[in-house]
Length: 166
Ligand SMILES: Cc1cc2nc3c(=O)[nH]c(=O)nc-3n(C[C@H](O)[C@H](O)[C@H](O)COP(=O)(O)O)c2cc1C
Image 1 (cartoon, helix red, strand yellow):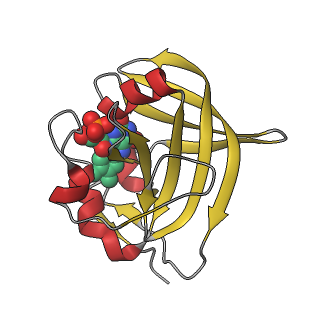
Image 2: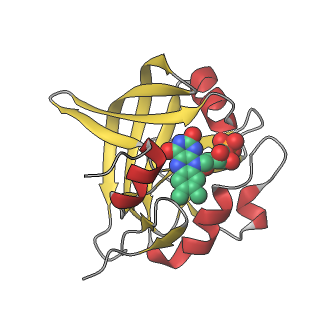
Image 3: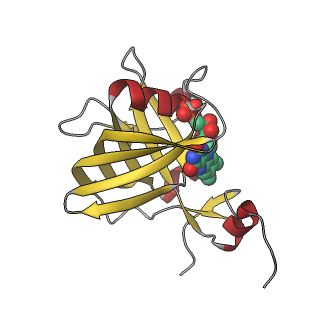
């Protein structure tokens, strides 16, 4: 085997997961950010975690509001999901810019993309500094799914979004 950097390894582990972390801004408007670094943590109780750069607006909103909805985006919104991963909600209305159709989630004031395969509504339990990211550890409040939506994955590291090959 050859020595690799961790980013090089992430290309070899493709397809990597893709999520859209949905939060709201202080005025209640939605923000969407693309996040690959997430994991299930526990099924009893239900817990998940995701890592976001310290500078991300989404992370700031999760720390302030204590809540988020993690979604697995459907193939229909691949381009918008790439856009949500290269702009920040600090200065961009991503929903308008990328034309993302939203849906309400019962029991939450955070909206999610209509084309979502899974939505995991969560509340922040704790967060930890991990290098240049914070790791957000969350309790799962509710889970929704729609098997008719085809899941997106990140290929060649994180450079292309497409369904997994069948
Ligand atoms: C495919 C893909 C995966 C990404 N995964 C992550 C990730 O796991 N963690 C992270 O902090 N940023 C990730 N990003 C970058 C963020 O989406 C990007 O920094 C975004 O501008 C954050 O938006 P916000 O400032 O509105 O939160 C990813 C981007 C793409 C395109």
